[in-house]
Amino acid sequence: MKKKTVAVVDDDLVLSKTLGLCLRRRGHEVRLFDTGVDAVKYFFEDKADSIVLDIRLPDCDGWFIARLLKKLEWAEKVPLIVLSVLEADRRKLAEVRPFAHIQKPFDMGQLMQTVEASLGSGRVGGV
Image 1 (tube, rainbow, N blue to C red):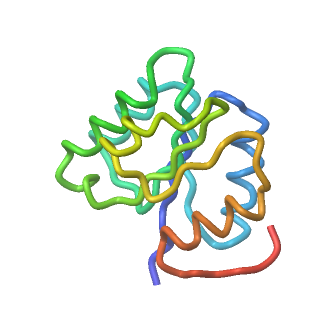
Image 2 (tube, one colour):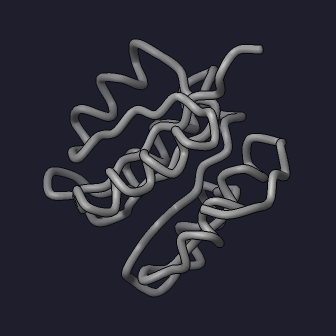
Image 3 (cartoon, rainbow, N blue to C red):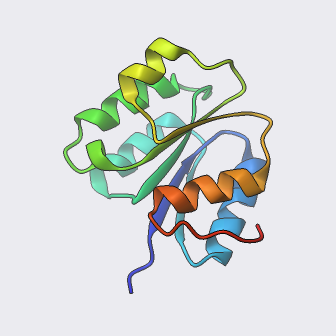
């Protein structure tokens, strides 16, 4: 069975690497991006099965990337998990309709369960 790919777009390198390690331990391929530009380049060249997207990025607004993903044929049905230190913007959430919105700081176990649910495995267990 082909490994599922999770794209993580977050400029917090410690968080990204930790999330990547946890996902790899669960048997997933992981692509880490710390800028919006690098993530967008990837999304135009390759596909992911789930996307974890921070809203506050150093080079662009994560909402822009979320709206762009809705326009890519392959990505419009890919589960998007929005991470943000900011309070939820209900209008923007309604516009991009993410699979989940998780506010930072968060419990890594909760995020792992959310990613697994987005991939359809519903796998529960340790981080």
